View 1: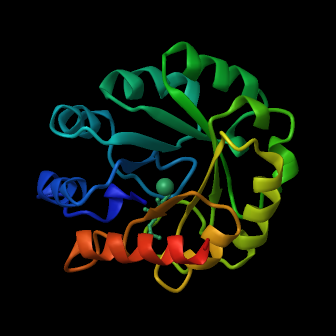
View 2: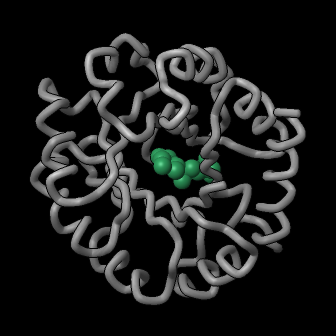
Length: 215
Ligand code: DX5
Ligand code: ZN
């Protein structure tokens, strides 16, 4: 599980972060929006910088921004362990991958709902993870798009066993099993974790459903 900070209480970030970390969570999903690539602005480098010393979780930073090369360095310096860029923002994905790696971070590439798996074919062997969007990026709390399930299956078939497959958007008790069965191993959930009265309990229940689906 990778709970998305976007759905946390921004006036009490550390409380929410501690709740899931104390419950065994190892990955925190950080949604960065620039108001250009997506029609919304979220938070940036200073928030990650402040969270870094108080959390041991793996910081999975989802860059919904038009210029990942320009901003990669401050996000890695702030404490991101992995940067995800969108394939839609560049004609030179290899340059983006090499730049992020040169900074010492892991790299993932992300596909919007209307971007076919073929768009990442030439570089897929070079990334640590692929992120399949199951909503249009920009906002939390949207409805899961079922077309993502088939895309997850297709992308899984392109990956080596050591490469991860993440899904993001509308992940909830009703949608998580299909995604896990289709090969997603990293499941982002915002509203279904931090939007719940008991985020830790909600996270455990989602994890249980995902594991049961793969048995
Ligand atoms: C959407 C973000 C997601 C978002 C998911 O642009 O990339 O990570 O926080 O939120 P939920 O789980 O509420 O759909
Ligand atoms: Zn995200």
